[in-house]
Length: 137
Image (cartoon, rainbow, N blue to C red; front, top):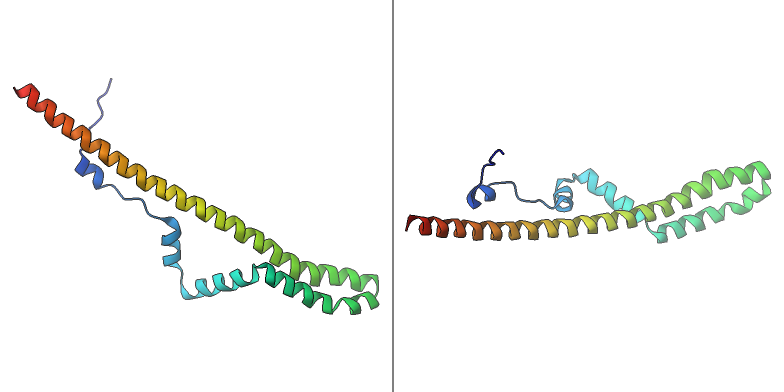
């Protein structure tokens, strides 16, 4: 059986610390990225979906007067593209918030686990020193 190298607590502390990916991502956004996120967060609300619905309904009477082809065109081009897009974005925003919360929770758990590992390693190093002293006597 091959022996594995035992690393000290000091060597362990040199390893890369966990980084919160959500914070790192937000810090990396450019001005244009921030503008895009702002627009997306506005369009991806139910209030915007309601406003788009009202806007689409303004042209509904003309679509009805125009006949079947005009009505199909209104549904496909006006209603679905304006309203459904916003509702889908609302759902995606909710899913993203859930994923971000889950990632934050995972990060907190990883930081806690690293602290526990450091504590255990410190305890083991203390035991090794004590055992070495006992063996010397």
